[in-house]
Image 1: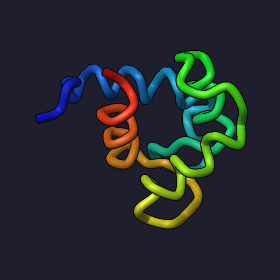
Image 2: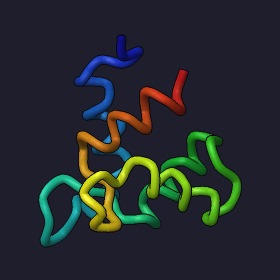
Image 3: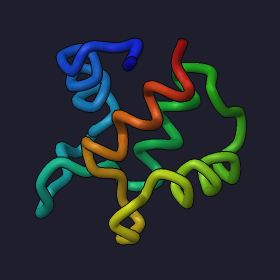
Image 4: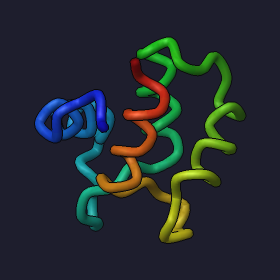
Length: 78
């Protein structure tokens, strides 16, 4: 059972999506995810995000879409 509501995750996604994914719909670029996770004290260095992206980027496009972000939040945030 997810620990966070969909609305909570949407708010976090919006917070992380600093450029509102210009030219794309609903995605986070690597550096946006790095900045977000650093602000939340979940990582300390940019290279720590690579395994997270590999695990959750189900589409393989190098970006994190909302549905992929849900998995990250539910695993990393208590």
